[in-house]
Each structure stands twice: as C-alpha cells, then as structure tokens.
Image 1 (cartoon, rainbow, N blue to C red):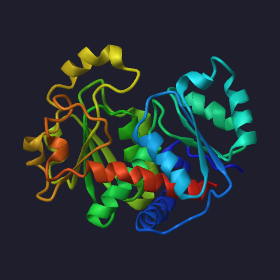
Image 2: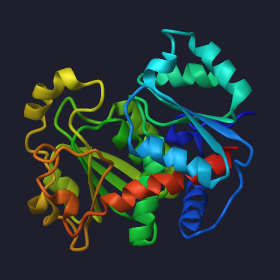
Image 3: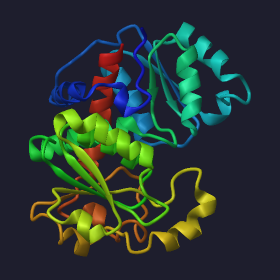
Image 4: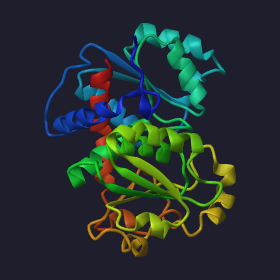
Length: 301
C-alpha cells in the first residue's frame, strides 16, 4: 500500500513525535541517503517561497533530485486529466509534492498515483506546515503535550492542520475567530477525536484575549489567503480586532513565543515590526519546514 500525506490525520497521533524527533536529528547534522537515486516531482498551482525551497533543498539533503513544475506547465484537470498526470509522474518520479486548491484535486491525484503523494497546501489543510510548527514548539518548550497554543484569526487550512497536530501530541489549541471565520465544525470535531488518546484538545472561541490567556504560543496567519483576493476588503473589516500585536502578547504567558507561517501582512493580522519582536520565533519556524519535510519524505519513501 502506498503511503500518502494528504491530511495531517494520515499519520497516526503516535507517529508524530518520532517523526519530529527525526527532524530535529536531521537539523542537528544527521545524514540520510533515503532519496539517493530518486526524484521528487514538485507540482505547484499556487505561488510558494518556503514550501518550494524547503522541499527542493530537503530532497537534495536526502540525496535525491527535485523537479519543479510551475502552474502553467501542467494545469491539473485543465490541460490534462488529473489521473493522467498522476500516472505519468508515478512512472518517472518517486514522490509527488502537490500544492493546489480543492482537496478533491489532490485526493484524485493520489487515488491514481503509485508513489507517495504529499500535500504541500490545499484549501482544506496545510499539514506540512503543522509538522514544522509542532517541531518548533517542541524545540521551544521541550514538548507539545500540555502546551497552550492560541491561534488568532481566520480558522483556515493552517488552523485546521495545526489543530490536529497539537491535539495529536497532547497539547491544547484555542482558536479565536469572529463569526463566519471559525474552524469548520467537522474539522474541529475531527481534531478533538484525533487527539483524544493523547489528551489533546481544540477549542473555538471568539475573544482573542480569552484565547491568549496563559498561552505559551500565540500564532496567527494572513486574513486573506491565496485565491481569496476578491474578499480582501470584506475580510479586513470582519477581522478587525483580531490583530496580534505587543499588547495582545503581553496578555499571554510571561514566556510566550509568537509564530506566523508567513508571508505576513504587517498592519493587518500583525502589527508593524512584530516578526522581529524578541518573542518572535517565526524564522526558526520557517527553517523547520526543511527539516520536518525531510523527515516526512524519509518516512514515506
């Protein structure tokens, strides 16, 4: 059976910790030739800096060869049927890394593929980001179990995957969002079920102040994600009051750390300069995309 990573829950809760420990080992200098003589096809239908760079460099660090396809080169389901692309890539590469829009696209791709398929972001989830996020929390706090994480803003794909990962490791995520921007009910229920055996939880509230009280980590993401540009003006109004700034961080735990998956929009979801606040660990978090994904590819191949 081919192992795919299309949603965070595609790996069992008890598999997350060893994977993140391996990521930390690789970051500390451990070497691996898991992809020696193998190729990784990187097919992105959305722009990317961190995801493209981290998969490219991570593939090379494991001894493999990355092959990148820009949006106009393939056209999943438009220029060529999704199943046809999956079959061709399966014949010529060893892992497919897909960044696209609807979750159904990557699910259809994986159903036709005979190689591991990795979700590098869809509208539903961003599971690779969640691996890097929880690796970063582990490094800062010594573990995720029992950690209090606050997520402020749009309950989007990043929030969904983060919820599964934090809960699966026994941590507690509180999401603060206005009406209309909360984590989908099915995802909220799913994350709590996923994390039940570890004692983890995900809770939805509306008040940012309530969410950050005693928090070890405060996390946010952009208010307007890729593909939502036409909604930008409305989102700026609806999410007003959900900015993360020094005042809000001051209401969290005394040793709070600030996280953001980037790119950020200062003046919107964060105040100017917050990425460089002494409490910010966003660039450690960005670097960990490389190591978490390298460990993931090593696991799946």
